[in-house]
Amino acid sequence: MNIKAGTIIISTALLDDSEFEKVAIVITEHNEKGAVGYVFNQPFPRNFNELEEFKHSIPVPLYAGGPVQTDMLYFMHCRPDLVEGGDLVAADVYMNGDFRKAVQLLNNGTLSIHEVRLFIGYCGWDAGELEAELEEGSWEVTNAPIDLVFAASVTELW
Image 1 (cartoon, rainbow, N blue to C red):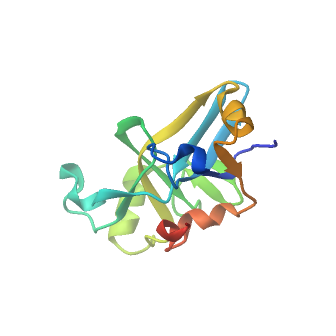
Image 2: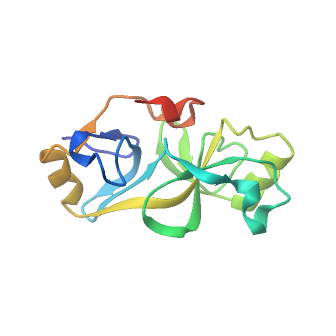
């Protein structure tokens, strides 16, 4: 199992009736300490502009990134030419960066809502946990390209 940043995994039937039923996750970090990823096909019940702090922003979909730190916003984008300071995940896709600038660019239309994904929370695994879950069959590794994260129809993956 060669899991690296940019790999997309999907839940199997073993995770039905759990918070990970029919979930697609993009892995953004995988090393000897563990793994980090974001659920990208589960819309959050509210849009970005429905959060008090961002009520003057345009309506951008939020995604329930995972059960860890659900009081935090994270974002993924494919425009490093516009949003500085992000960490390369794979193939010109970046995590985080200058959030204020990203919001400004979204609001003025320079950055499209199809070039960014906003997540509430993330998924995390300690060393060896993800590998054990893959081995038991809870997750399936796909060969899907990372830019699937930005597809308009990600909620229809199943």
